Length: 337
Image (cartoon, rainbow, N blue to C red; front, side):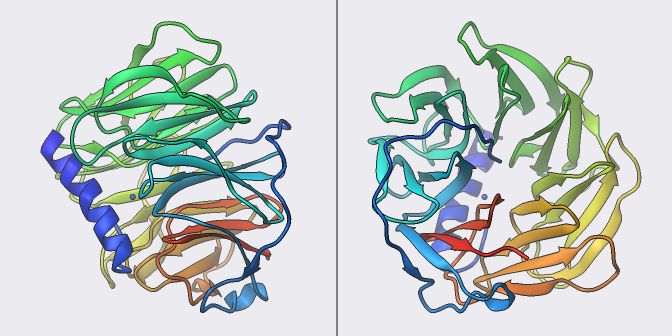
């Protein structure tokens, strides 16, 4: 199980560099020291239907990003840093350096919490102030730290120990504890929190989108387990959207009732759809293989529409005042629909 996870992460990074894929964020009102102004057009891109876009900062295989208080925080897996840049562009700042596999992150209460998921060895969970400084360890000896989330009171992250674990600790500190456990040939790929509901997309021969609660009730599949690779989830009012990472025509976006039920196909025939970001009725998703970002109106049966093109290998995505994307070599801001 551990070998499979590390192999999968190594493939993710290699595929990003070759424009073939295979890996949320939180907001508060605090802000780090303001970088300068600047930015430029998307390299080689026109922003598609979004009427242009802006490169905010260079990046090195960013695996996650979050928008908070007018800043974009992101992990640079390739350089081993957690960094920040203003949503208006300018000089990026490294908040923490010398990290081994920074992967997922969230921002709350003036602190960036992030996971470490190195391609070899065991990772963990750490934190750093939004003003930068020496990282503080939250939990060590974590394998499969692919997802992290917070409700502002507690911090939650994924662990892989012969299945899927969700662990938690109070934001203010304390002793981490196991909250959820689900066994079998499954590997966590992300983690999403909505209200008291936790969702874990997984890969493996018994993969599913798992659902549990912050109260610690039993975690369970939303639908029948399968061999699909669920790359990400986005949570709506009544449904959960999930991307199925597969080559066309098997790649797709599907939806489930929030507390379990049969999957409904939202967008079929896709080529390796990856990360999701929901903004009202618009579901944005990244397409690293094609160098594109697409958008699907989930209230209609219309096919997804090309939203931004000419990127290298876009992966993480978040929606705030605009759409923010982590390309393999840049953090990009694109006006939203």
